[in-house]
Length: 383
Image (cartoon, rainbow, N blue to C red; front, side, top):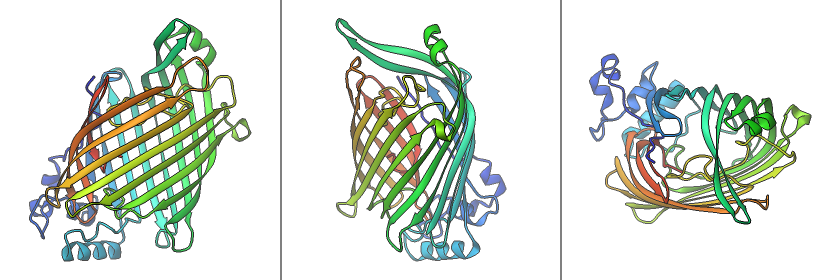
C-alpha cells in the first residue's frame, strides 16, 4: 500500500498578493516565508493536503497555519533573526491557530480548527481544537483461538463532532506544567457487519476528563534540535460526566533530541498507553493503537501499547536536512482471544527550513513496514 498522509505545497497565489522580495531571507538570500507570516496582516502558511489512502480513496483539502504575535514580539523575533542564523527560533509564539478541511472519494470528510494561546510569559497555556465530519475506515482485530488464526477486517462509517481542550499552569519558573484536559465527542457509527451494527451501531456521546503533567526543555516548538519533552495524562470516561462509554486511558510520551556534532542530531521517542475497559462494549476506535510512520492508524490496537523510535538527522546546511528513522511497536491484548502484535517500520526523509525566524521546517518522509509503504509530507520532525 502507498499512502500520502498529507502534502505541504506553497500556493502560487501568495506571489500575486505580496512582493516577491518578501519571500527571500535578507540574511542568506534563500526562499523563506518568515517575513510573510510575521509582517502580512493576513499572513499564514498554506497547507494544501493531498490524500491517496486506499482505505478512504483519493482526496485532498487545505489548511492554514496562523501565528499571532504582538508588534513587540514581532520586533524581538525579527531582531534575533537578523543577528544570528538560528535567531528567533527559540521564541515561542504566544498564540497560533490552524483551520482546514479534507475530503476523499469514498465520502470521508472532515472540517477542523485549533488554537493555542499562552499568557504571562507562558505561565498559563490553553490549547483547544475541534471538528466534525464522516470517517469511513477499516478496523482490524486478530482472532487466535485454537485452530483459528485470522485477522478480521471490520468496515465502519462514523459521523462525529469532537471538541478537545486543556489548560496548563507552569510550576514557578521550571519546565514543568500541570493541567486539566477535556474531550467531548458525539458520534454515530455504522458497521458493514449486521451483528456488530445491532450491538454497537448507535449514536453515542464520549465524555472524558483528565489530568496532565508535562516537562519540556526543547529549543523549538516546531523542529527541535536539542532538549527533552516528557508528558503523561490520565483520562477518565464515565457516565457520571455524560459519557455513554466507561473506560480509562493512561498515555505517556517522551522525546529526546541530542546533538552529537554540529551536523548530526539523534532523536529518540517513546510512547506507552494503557487502556482499562469498564463496559462490555465500547466504541471500536476508543482503544489506543501503534502510531509509527509506515503503519496505518488503528491497524494495531490493544489494551497496552508500547512504541520506541530513533531518528538520525544530518544538516547539509541550516536550510536542508536529511534523516533516517526506525521504530518498533507492540499492541498487547488482555482478552485471551487475540495474540499480541509487533510491527517494525523505518524510512528516510528530508526537511527544508521554510520560515527561519520561527524554526519551521517542512519536507517528505518515506516509511515502510513489513506489509505497508507510506509517503508523508510533514511540518515538523515527524515524531
